[in-house]
Length: 301
Ligand code: ATP
Ligand code: MG
Image (cartoon, rainbow, N blue to C red; front, side):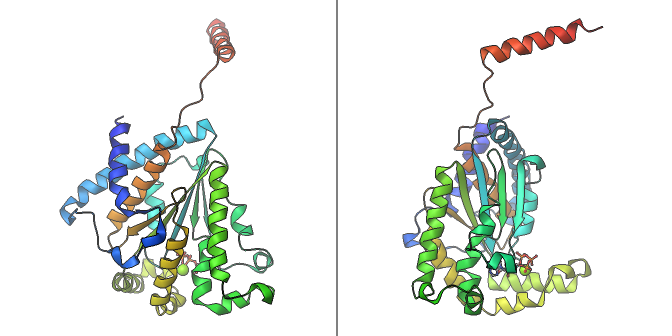
């Protein structure tokens, strides 16, 4: 397979959306409608490219699994209806399920609230050789929790620790945690699927109009939409504070699902291709054992 070429294209496609130094990042510089210069006529070609990308991803994952050294953690964050679930479903469609773990993080349970906020996510970090997907994550702790202070109150932090700099401390701790993961062979990539408020409205209406999509709609989605500006501020601050070379954010235009998926697949290919994955080498004694096994099988009646 022309893996090398696919890897090169994947790098080129995903690079413009990668933030590895948040200092100068501004959300308004990313247009949710952006399709990287491709038009809707390119859509069929983009879909083909996605298919090719998915196959390349499966080949890389196979080596990741066989080599059993690195793990890849993919974090997805977005407003409702931005397409997290669809992106995960399409991009990971060719992957061997044995090598992949998906976790969705919703509002914490009573038991989870009794612990520090990284506790529930830390146990879900992928094992070596695996790809782990977080559908929402500990980033909610600096997003929804910042937008709704009453959620923070429910966390029952000692009041000495619940100070003005609480969110700055959380950014620091999250960055430190991600650095820790990186130093343990867990490669972290974070995706913010950036949908516009207008497109979200269109997708909500679609969910309300089509009976088979009704289940996706919840009344609280409209309530959260009311806090759009606060959320955008929280996302911008979080990305600015936690985008690093080792754990970059990808801010992916999300008004066109086909484009979102191409960028996400490309970024994952780029991450895996950077690891110099190889199948484990078979040493001399193992080679001899294989030869002996072959002989024995051939000798069977
Ligand atoms: P999604 O909204 O991710 O598509 P869903 O609709 O199936 O999934 P929900 O029941 O809406 O699931 O759960 C997601 C909600 O949980 C989000 O609104 C999110 O903000 C909230 N949530 C996630 N983590 C936390 C947290 N640590 N504290 C408070 N709320 C959280
Ligand atoms: Mg929801």
